[in-house]
Each structure stands twice: as structure tokens, then as C-alpha cells.
Image 1 (spheres, one colour):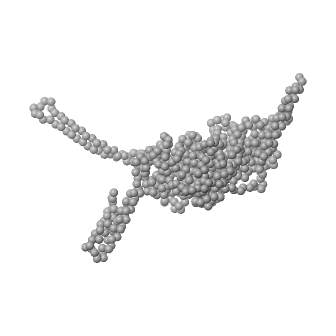
Image 2: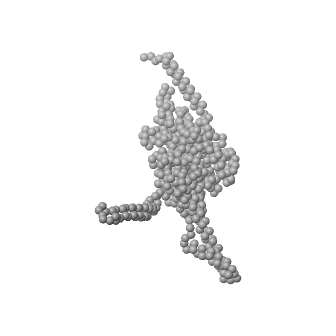
Image 3: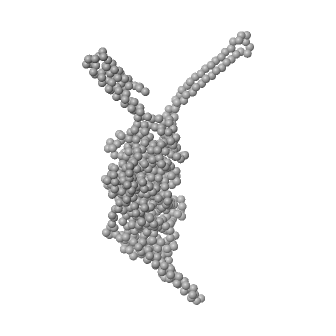
Length: 579
């Protein structure tokens, strides 16, 4: 529809051009100036019709609807440093989010199979091509995704900066020891995240604090003695009295040795052969923690984690813009996957702490991305602190989950913490009952004018009961009334959030809302991934503890002691003491 003065001038210009083409005006030089009118008028009318086609808002359709998007952030991105999320559906404009807003974190919510992972891969593609680093925590063993990421890094010329953590395929995984770096308090904090929360259980909190004290003392002693350790070493120490006693033979600082002796003294008991550590009492205090630590030391887990020279160091990866893909076996080994996810996130907290201590010029640039896909499968309460403080380390958290119930399952306040600390929110199609309403509430409401139309019609007839003539009366009336009232309504209706197609999303960035289509990075042929090995050597002033190689020594010692006790008991039975 053509309206307005500009359209009228455009039509007038076209009319002047038509008039100037008349044979009666042939040969008139003054007429040549009128020929600019059709060009300008046609250009304007073409522009108008093109804009009408591009701005094809249609919110009434049940499927394939198009919602109006707010103005994009071109004016806020003078340096063009940012990440592209997709293209608006109403006018096809790119939606770019500046790095300063990406570091305020981004939440991706939607049911399975609608495009969350595809969008995540697109974000990581951009990050890799601009020289940035990322950690992709995947709640499934997806070899195709691993191969694509490795091929993507190869295309970027950065295959040597790509690491894979896959406990299901140790031969094709880089090694990792998350309890090696950091001081004793940091290591104890990471390990404690393996235990369930004890906020509402005083008894469980007591054992948790005891485990924290024990881990701090033991790891502090090993660090003071300049001995590198792994999960297997800690598991042996926590379950063998001889292994605990062997720590006292290591060279360490006097104050650390005193703390270790005081700690071990509470477990000592007297018997006929003198004093010894009561292993049963140790297990009562540390049994739950020892079992969880031992899980990382066995089987395929042990092949990845039992190392003194790990290839994967999260602080190094974040600081130097490297890339890591973590594969969690949630389907086949759900308990192990949950523990591994918690361990990686706990190690990431330490990495954030280390990056915060650096000068601003040494922090990752562009911002480091952490894409936690299907976070509801391995999330824990302690992860909330990452969202509160990661921004100061120039790290962007991008959690992806299916419903808000995944967050509420952690704690009633966990949902508010995550949603409240994410500046950008990307809503894909929902399938649950409450999530669309929750998302619509988060997006907010706006004032709209509601039109109401009413139609009325009446008809009547009357006559006198006593009359001398056949005279009577009849009436008929009708009317139409129109009214407008101001009302509040959702900016995006819950029905729209439940009816979007694959690859469609509603993006809320700050106060602006966009309806976008997300791109898909597709490769014609991807070669299978083969792990790239990174040579790491022991520091010259440190040695490996190597308790695993000496485990038979501890077992034999235990067997010998048991044999001696059995012999003593047997002799006592044969020769009972006299009264």
C-alpha cells in the first residue's frame, strides 16, 4: 500500500517521465531534466516494495509465523568485535552480540533436537576462526561432533591447540589430572564437589568437613614434599595404613610434618605389637570420598587420569586460548559422567580464580567461551559462582538445557541464579507445559491497544387494546460501536514459543527481543579424529609418588600382618593364659 508524501513525489516523477516521452515534446532540451524523475521515483517505489517484502511480519500463522524484531545492535558495535547468533526473520538482518555483552553470559533453552547444539557449534566455529578459545562440555559420546570440531580446528590452522577428553576411548583421548595443580585448599574443594550437598544435614556436613580437613592435610604434605600424585595414589593412601605411614618418610617442611602427624595420631591405636593406624576408623571418616576417588583410578578412567604429566591443564587452555572438547558418558555411565562433569567444572572454577589474578592485558582476548551442552545432566550447585565471577576473567558461560525444571532440580533458587546472571537468553521450541509460560514471563510484557467491536439490533411492535381504528406502531433499530483500550500482553506469546520450527529461536538480549533463524555449519566430508599428543615433562624439582607401582608392597605388608595376628590368635587358643 502506497501512502505519504514521498510516495506521491515518486509517482509524480514517474508521471513527468511519461509526459516527457510524448512525441509533442521531442527535441525540447528542457525535457531531458524530467527523465531523472522516473529513475528516482522508480527507485523509491522499488525500495518501498522491497522493504514490505523484507519486513514480512505475520504473527497470526500457527506455523512458520514471523514476529517483529527490535533494532539490532549495529550502533553498539563500532569495532565489530562480537559473535553472530543468526539472522532476524522479519528483515534478514544479522544479529551480532558484542563481546562486552557475551561476557555477561548466554543461556540456551529448548527441547531436544531443535538446534541448541547446532547453534553452539556455529558459535564455536566463529570463536575458532577469530583465534579464541573454548571448552565444549557435551553430555553424550558423539564421535561425529568430535570429528567436526577437530576438522574445524584444522581448517583454522589450529589442530595443535585442540584437546579431547574421552574416558570411553582412552587411546584417543588426551590425559588429564584435575587434582594436581593448585594449593591444597583448591584441590580439596574440587574433590568435595564429588560429594552430595550437605546443607540440610548436620551429620553429613560433619563428615564432609572431616573429609575436607583430611584432603587438605594429605595433599598439603605431598605438595610440600614436591611429590606429584594422581587419583590412584590418593585412593591407596586413604585405604592403607602403611601408605599413610609412608608419607612421614617424605621430606617436607616442619610445620607441614607436624600437621600431618597430628592428623594421623587421631587414627592410631595400640595393640600387642605397638601402635598402628586404625584403617577402619579412617574409612569411617573418608570411606565415601575414598570410593569416589577410587572410581577415577580404575579401568578406562584410570588410563586417562593416572598421570603425573597431564596434557590437559584448564588454566593453560583458558589463558592461551586453546580448545577442549569434553565427552561425558551419561547414557552408559551416568554416575561416572556426573562425577566427571562436576570435576571439570570445579577445575574450571580454579582456572577462573587463576585468570582473575592476572593483569587485564593477559586475560583471554577474545573472551573465552564455555559451552555446557545439556547442563542439566551434570550440573551442581557450586557452578552458580562461575556465573557470578567468570565475567571478571573475560570468560563467557553458555549453558544449554531443555527445561527450567533441570535448574530447579538442583535447588529452588538455582534457576534464579542462572537466569539472573545471563544477559542473553535464547529460547528454542519448548515441549513442556510450564517452560513456555516461564520464558514468556522472562521476556516480559508490553502495552498494547486492544480493539473491541460490538453490534446491536432491536425490533419492537405495539398496539392499543381498545381502539376504534386499526392503527398501531412498530419500531426497528441497530447500531455498531467500536472501542480501544490499553492492556498488557506478552511480547512473545507462549503459543509462539511452542510452535517454532527447527533452527528458529527467540533471542532476548538485555531489553531487546529478536526472532531469528540460526545458521548451520555443514561439512561435506569430515575425516575421523586422531588424538594429537602433547609432550609434557615433570618439573626438575618434583618426583612422582608412584604408589600404584608399590601397591603389592602395601598388600603384602597387610597380608604378613594378618598372618602374624592369626598366628598369635592360634597360639593363644592352644596355650590359654593361666588364671
